[in-house]
Image (cartoon, rainbow, N blue to C red; front, side, top):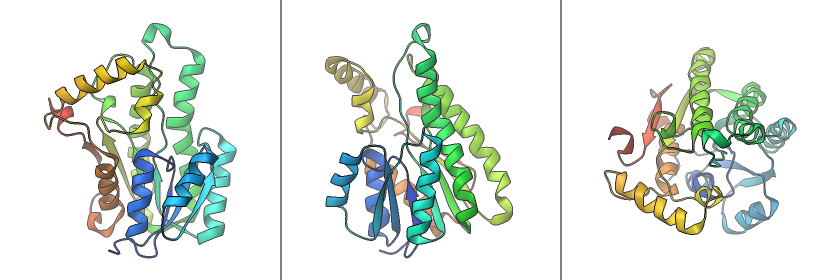
Length: 249
């Protein structure tokens, strides 16, 4: 298994969920991986279970200085970058009538400003023919009450990725977005909802999905592997829903 042999991949939000599953798969496929997260304890735990050539970097994408730090440590360790997977994101719930400045700033700083600034920092170090991936969401098109700011942030990220696709075309860099549906990741436990509400929401979500279940992080990781590898050499500028068909009903 060597679809990414000797490729250098930087993954944000990689200490759990989709990011961790992707880091594990990329390592299995021969990549050198920079695993970024904002909790040192979680990064330490990750370092104990993963095998392969990797480093961990403590960085919060919502902090501009941390994006500089992330790319600097990545290039110091491995040189240029082949794959940039901007996966970190948050999804706190707030009805429109309860949206605050802090809520808006928290969501947009992490979900939009962070990826944009990380891309800016990384671009001089991304090899021509490289791959940039974003984790979007089907919520930019599919309506879920309470996720107005989160939906807006993912819509903004998609708009940015489309412009970026054009701006890097001369370098042969491909830019793609993965739009997950309901995936069984720790993010659901961070929505600020009571446990019984979370359980009920999960049941309702699963019932809405044509495949009748939540996805798992490994299914998104396999999608990321496809888009990052030469298997997707002619796939560029897309927003790929990985949602069990939820966005189609």
